[in-house]
Image 1 (cartoon, rainbow, N blue to C red):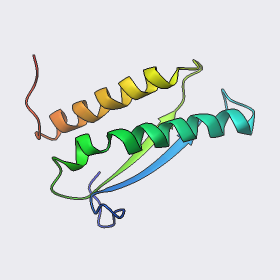
Image 2 (cartoon, helix red, strand yellow):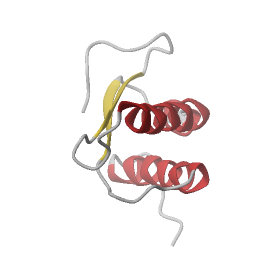
Image 3 (spheres, rainbow, N blue to C red):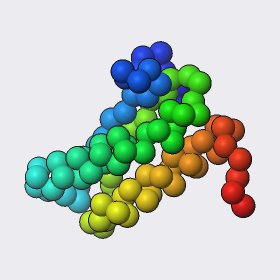
Image 4 (cartoon, one colour):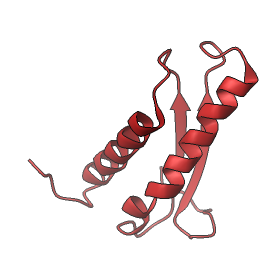
Length: 94
């Protein structure tokens, strides 16, 4: 979603949410929030290198599965590439 406000980089605003339905304990939810924020931080260059206007993103972790850091990181990269493809900012690798 395009936005008027952005972070210090000037192009992205991001939030995270983890479902209480599947992770009742706060320390479990906090763990996944930290992992989501870290994978965003490490991979946001995929988006910021190609974006020309500011966007807001919201990550929702709503699965019952406890994915590993590597799985979440891989899925974050795939999500960013799909987003760029949808916005017409990247050619398909097919």
